[in-house]
Length: 279
Image (tube, rainbow, N blue to C red; front, side):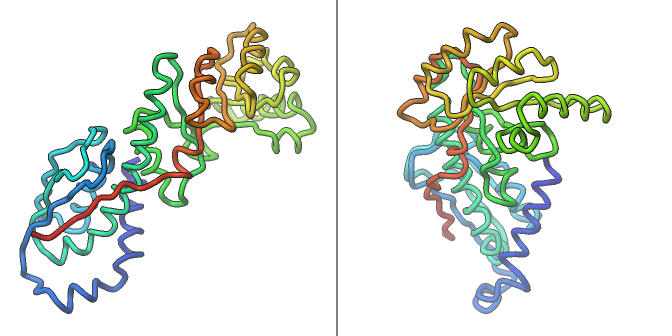
């Protein structure tokens, strides 16, 4: 993960700085030192503090970075959460990347925390998805964890997830599962296998396969999930997704499922207003 984050920071800085911060080079002496204060302007679960340290270190290891808040902490609006001291040119180089990351990560962490608390009394875990911003996934999933959620697979490489399109292409759900089982055995793979079902008939047809770690029930209503769980004689772990939001997530949590996954955690997020000001 650290390697991925270092790579992300490098690429993002190249995107933003290019051949140099022309405005700062033109207006500020390269030897000028100063201090900037980071302000949070909205109530939130703060996220991106550790990442901010990493950004500052990569831009200028001589900067002194002091945050009073930590990732996952509730921060009230209009609160100063830390300072960055050192080269003014360096601070202005990293300002936008640091804020973009912290604002979006804090938005995700705040939303995740809200949903996690809603379902906590029912012992249901909240999962994210791959519905993330390209090249920013590692940070968005990091924010989900900070907010109290659980990371689903990171990509197509670390978990098998047999969905409707795989099933359609394979002919039917049993063909897809049996082909997967053969592939896993032939290649000596031991990674999680999740299978999506669209009705109880599909569930019953694959629930006996030991290779399956979790069954995803997609676009089921809570009452349909309750009925499906009566058929779960093999005690498969059950995940629900599709059409789940703040108005109905408790109804899903009450059914007795193990996981709820929400793409909304990362693909539909209001960033938190955070600023960095030279003082």
